[in-house]
Amino acid sequence: MSSIVRRIAVFGVAVLLVGVVAWPAAAREPAQIRINRGSSALQDGSARIALRARCDANLAAFELDVTVQQGGVIGEISTVQAGVVTCDGGWHRVNVVVEPSSGAFSSGRAQVFVFLGVFDQNAGDLEARASGNVHL
Image (cartoon, rainbow, N blue to C red; front, side):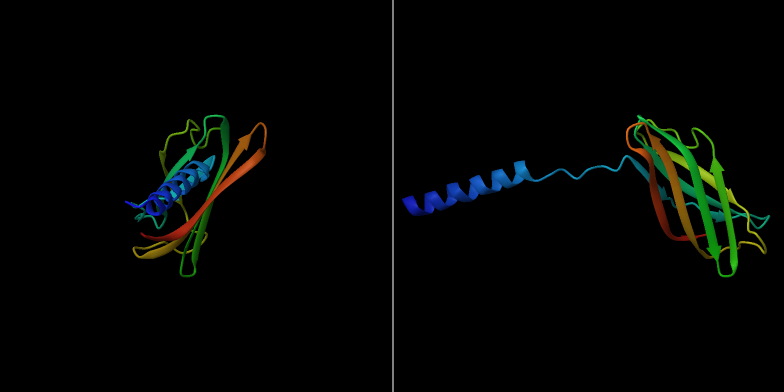
């Protein structure tokens, strides 16, 4: 291998290594909420929404809001209480039953909007949001 090719190769490896070391790690959000599979329309016309939530152990979850819209049928539930989601850094399943304000949810596609409020003693109130389509 010629000395020029070797220098280019060494320089390329050095640039690659510096880039890997200097590349910032993707910061994990302190609180996250996701809409899970497994949501369903219940016989009484309400909807069970399957969620997964996690928050860092130094946080305190205090609010979980879920809104479901299916055509002209809308329902929402707001739970405001300490520990609405366990904050220990792990993922937890959360099932929420949402009753429509009028009409009934039925089997089929629906839109879901979710808000999770958490408190951090240093940063104050933080939030996580999710939205998406589910099949009831």
